[in-house]
Image 1 (tube, rainbow, N blue to C red):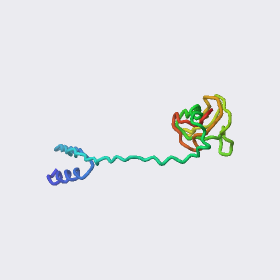
Image 2 (cartoon, helix red, strand yellow):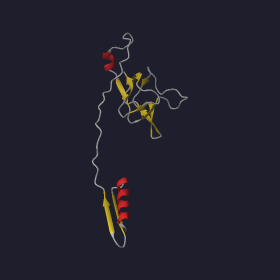
Image 3 (cartoon, one colour):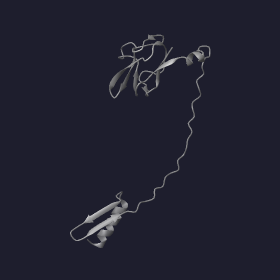
Image 4 (cartoon, rainbow, N blue to C red):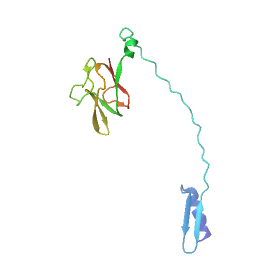
Length: 147
């Protein structure tokens, strides 16, 4: 191998993303390594998120807070997509004002193309549905308020 060819290999290595190269023939062995380039990181800018203003609530229609504190919740047993009815053309499993019993199906959660029935773990009256059809819910997220 000629010295010009070695110089050309060094230039190619320098311009490439390869950090190490070895070449071996019957006559010689060549090993080239790039020195590690110091990495320069850009300063991290911290941003502060601002919450949107709270919506105005008509206090006359709001229920007393001591009552809301006594409500219990039916929570999501898994991560998935919330559906309140068994099919788009069917009625919802439960609506506000309905009485539910422990073990009754209250909604469906779709996870990985599997539809899972969610059963109420408590009995009572549905006061509020806390998520909308098609919403992605997290494990332990409240789905229904029950009194």
